[in-house]
Length: 493
Ligand code: UN1
Image 1 (cartoon, helix red, strand yellow):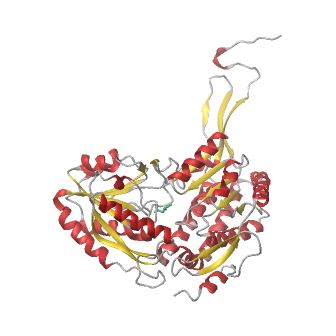
Image 2 (cartoon, rainbow, N blue to C red):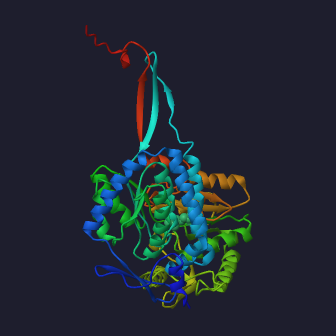
Image 3 (cartoon, rainbow, N blue to C red):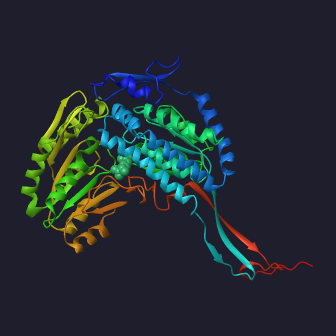
């Protein structure tokens, strides 16, 4: 199936040979479970060296004017443009996304680099009126310091890209701890990035920290990292937050989601069907923004669900490199077990599995389950192609069910009625809330992230650059006297 694994790796300068002696991680392609590489892991001494280099790189980067850092990030974007196809193939090989989605992920890096380059000439602080005569108050933004970026397997490149482009423009080096389920994509991105930054004499602007999740704890606790930006499970996020808070550091968390699409009785059904199918089963349901709950109006529930099941049953599941495939494999056998278990639990709690189940190995058929709103499982995230269908009576009911989840990442409503749309957006407690388009596939221009167990962070877009900078208020006296604020007098002769 993937006889050209070696050529995909070679195109990006990666070897499929076993790594040198020492701890290694074996990388298997989810497509057929075959070992495609073995990568060397970092030990404690390496980890300390990486942090020390990052601290030195922070000093060097701060000395480079922001628009020049923007230029470096623009070149980074160009390099990713150039390698888009090759990187996309690697993402498909390593995590099983179909090529269109894999390339879309690389495009997301290109987009955020363009965005960050623009920011490099527009980031500024406010000038404020001072209560003291001949004084000016102004706000200045300084680089924060090294950023530790922890990413998950499902977006093995883009999430680092969001963080890296903004962090670097803001003057911070970035150390990337990728998921050991997808280290090759990280190695390829790092190779590309280090070439760009070496051209500018800014080595170590990006580095990799190749350690397992448990061994990342020491880096998370390391005060040399001013910001820990972590994407992954809520459990991981809680532990990161706990450790970083204890040292009064900053964290930026982008965790799971249990996202709902609401389809009202007046919805454009064709649009809604497409959005639900892509949202729930695209990326084999392995996005944090994947649609996990369909809240459909009682009046159209029967016909909508019938059509949805028909479309779902016709989806082509299989080798993601095959042109007709829309749903590739799950990342590993554990993910398949969790999916199978979720179907059993849903059945045990009174759900009716209308279609879907395990096929073989790492392949599953997307599942649609007729569920009840009070089944405990519908309140939890299952990372896979599984959709709970729940009927709702009206928009207020939809809001109530949508919000009855520990997560608050993304939601969407399909309706032609402006009033229903606005009421839903008003009432949904999620960080992202769409109208007549699905829950996943956010653009980099908007702040991305969610509430509650989704972590509260906002990555990419909008004004998220503020999280990568240290804010300073500066009072400047351009007069000849020293008036004190609040009218305080302290006369010394
Ligand atoms: C994730 O699943 O961790 O909005 C990120 C989306 C993508 C990013 C998802 N742009 O689905």
